[in-house]
Image (cartoon, rainbow, N blue to C red; front, side, top):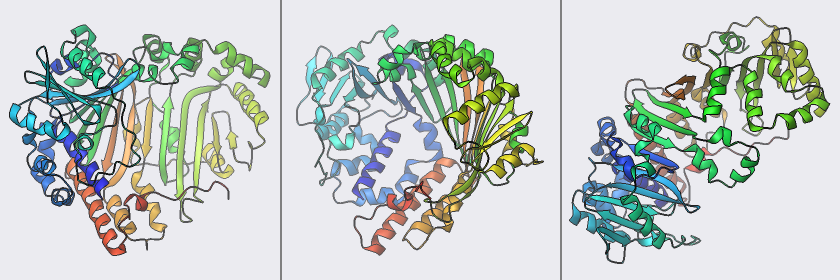
Length: 547
């Protein structure tokens, strides 16, 4: 229970401490190599879910009444402004790399210096020191706080939390926790460097980040994919494959809005110039809706469809310098890259339907179909024959059943389903189809149908039926489309649709998680098991692949 409260507190703190303006002034103290940046518009969110509404939730009431929570924690929950932080000026969270080690930082403005000093006494046993015009304070867990005039910076090891540094409650269990590395000297230097960061070394001149901040949204996220991968353990191996041609300058931005009945996410993906040139040249126009209508089932759980020119894959492989190696492997099998790029017409589909888990997740039954439009049947047959050489489980009445005619290739887990797809007369009308058409990439997942399958399970376990009912009344589906190139990047739009279309999704999510919390509390009381966990009701049993 206390871990549940601590998680709830961290979520609350992030929301409360995250009112950020749209100006790129905030980027002046974010290093250009930042891996991840998050910005939350508290004013916008407050119009959709007020702090007073949060205080009415049972999660909040439980936290504020918990006797193990220290007074400073309760004071913060009752009156967030007691922290001394100026929420109107905002706070920015980011992670970055310094000398091969990652760190987490939070930056913002001070509204009341006295309250700010008092707030940070909960995280430190020492006193602040002066380094020029910068104040530095060593915090618990080897974190560091620096401030200059009204600007402050927290720097800590990744994974550390404010509540952990301040011992949020009196019964914090530190057993088996490895103390974080002492990087206080390094963090103090970082603080000073960030206060004097040159514009060219910050995100202030990053066009992608500037463009993100201009988008209207409740939450903004910037991800430096290039830096993320280059700082990973796999960077060396990828360098040998010349994948820098793919990764250089790669970044993604996300804008999230909590609208009535849905959560909208707009993504823009920026890739290297070389990869951009290829994708623009070989990208498609729209997914083939006829391939979707041919699915011989009204009970589709999910699908993903693409339209692109297959020659683009060959060009991307050539860009890595691996084309020779790939051909040397495939030619003895009877085909080459040229056969691969000309075998299909670029229309692809993968769909799942008719899910039945009445026999539990150990023995689920379903249909799937992987389909491709045929451009050159002879070349495709070369690839299929090569695949047959690698396994005896491809063909009629095997694990990988396939059927093809002059226009379509389909592979399925059931030969009858593949045959119906290719040779049948299905012209199924799907209510979501209109939202998928007109884009090179389309994705659909029916959350409600997926969740409804769990109704066949044993509902005698305490809390299980209540959780399922709440979930069925909340989640509808996910629809994602995109792939178009606009303003220097590839755009994608995702809708997480809820059942209730009349109220904003943030309020609905607040009520949903509050109901799960109440179910957890009720179940714990009824069973008398103090260690009973909500997640034990939500996690399905392992899948048994041997039937």
